[in-house]
Length: 345
Ligand code: SR1
Image (cartoon, rainbow, N blue to C red; front, side, top):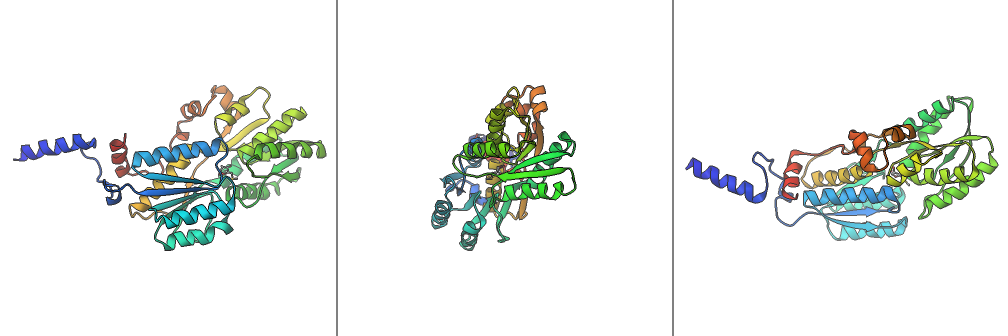
């Protein structure tokens, strides 16, 4: 009898593709209607956001989640109506990716009040039921600013590229503001920047003007890859010796940083695909009824031009080989998720 039961169990296990000893999955993932998660994005232009989305889609597929994606392309009003739409759809969870707090706060409260599990990436809210995921933006700012101050030997004029109202940019700039006070021979000359569907082009023209207005500029702190790409193009066109310090990484960024004579010498980054995957895991765990910390942080790495060149890194795939920690943080992954990965291979 016991033998028969074992054979039956073994067949069941084979039939579902779940290995023996696999963790039982929470009821919401146990095979009924798949949970629906809405991803409500403010920004989607550029490599960073494309990789983020690819990671989120992949994790959703592996966890058996139906992911519905809304993209506002920088339009705050559209993002607000997308978020309202997602609330009306009574989805199991909502992930809000970027956006401005004043637009989003009342709607995040509404989502929570409607019993929808709610996660944000790069959006601050005072609603303590919302899990807020971010890269460690203070660390990103500090890594890059320290590298810049070392490279210029704590002396010289530095330009800042910045646009207000975005949590990650505000945090990175706050580090620069705090640190520069302690370097009497470092002077910030100029601040410029825009976030739009043409951030790179606009920052390039603004940097052209800033370089003309400040002929002694030695370095530019540009804490977003679209800023760094725009700034470096202007520096290259000017033929000046100005170093660019950015944030983020992507295939296009790696190419730009490693190109001969590139002024973009360092960046701080997490893997954007990993952020997308982690956002979906946070949503999944909330749907499963698990309690999570209010703030979840992904830790960045400092990546220099020298490192990329010496390791012959040309793509993100090369980078994940050269820097394995960069590939997959595994943050908030559970044993029951492994069961679902097996099932949804
Ligand atoms: C406009 S905010 C851009 C930043 O959002 C993400 O956190 C990326 O790191 C990017 O730098």
